[in-house]
Image (tube, rainbow, N blue to C red; front, side, top):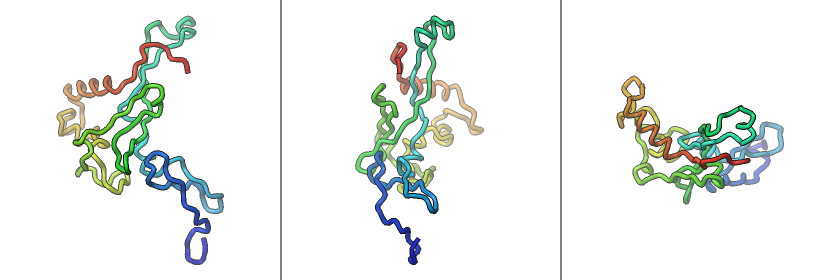
Length: 176
């Protein structure tokens, strides 16, 4: 720090590669060389596991070894990154987009601000409905859970439909 209390290194932080608007967050500590995280704070908070999954199948070697039965499969949650257009959060994209091609763009309804969750996640513009769609308050409004937070039969069915729609299933073993 100099006498004005400002950082000695006055270089501008690199922009976040996801939103291309905000600066990447600092990752260094006092006395360490200047370094930055991969993304800005907002993109980091919006990244993570959500509704998308991939179906995986055992390899022929695993089936031959008896580790898995032929035809067995399982779903694995996949991390998502926020999609931006002109600084506006418009949806999410799978981090393995090249393999599955999955992305979800918000509808006009989902792009509207959510008054119930404004200012959560540190978003300066508040939170849009597409981000907090699965929060308990909204599930209660849609009849997917009861006042105590327990999922209803209707909620189970809706969750199953959303889960199936957001799943990528190649139908066979994919070597990585």
